[in-house]
Amino acid sequence: MADHLSEEEQIEAFKRWWAENGLQMIAAVVLIVGGYFGWQFWQDRQQTQIEQASDLYVEMIDIVSSQTDGGRLTLEKEVAIGKLADQLKTEFSGSGYAQFAALLKAKLAVDNKELDLAAAELQWAMDSDPTPETERLVRLRLARVEAARGNLDSALQMVQGIDSADMKSAYEEAKGDFYLQQGNTAAAYTAYESALAANQSSDTMISNILQLKISQVKPAETTIETPETDSQEGDSQ
Image 1 (spheres, rainbow, N blue to C red):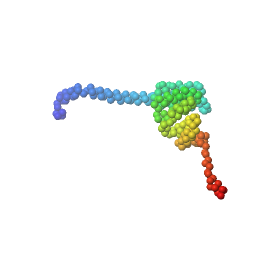
Image 2: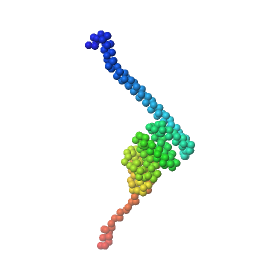
Image 3: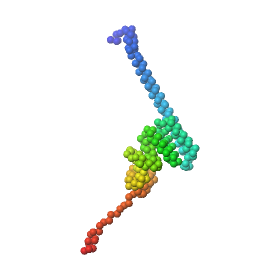
């Protein structure tokens, strides 16, 4: 029927349709276009932030790598690393770079025997929604720091009931160390045995250390004496 309408009738019909649907159509187009450019802006902003965070983290690693003699970093370098780490945590707190910056800052704190600071940095990383892989690493380091602070019960709780995945050997070794510090050599022995069984590293040093730890807590073998009843009866006859 529309094919037979006159040009004037078609124009009038379009005007009526536009009056009823024009605003909704414009709104839909604005939303689609605005949504696209908004998404594009968000992606660009995210990429820019990632690049900026990466630059700061690389700068931290460069400072660490500059200590070529393998010795302790100078106070000036440690201060510089601390400032960069704090900047990453403040400006890019949601990035993995900020979490690894906290890990590095915690390591320096441990080297300086500042265990409270190390625990605070590691706890910050734990609370910053890390990936499962990063969370396992942070959790293990925090547990070791807590053990060093004398909080052995807390340290053990942190490494128990955890899906440690490819870090199982390291987790079991940590359990063994904590049990040994508590004086529970039997539990330490079991944990070290599990650590050795789970070890997949090609570094023989790791297996050698585990073997040494096992030997230190291995239960003493008891010899069972065989009754000499038969021989005694033969002698009596």
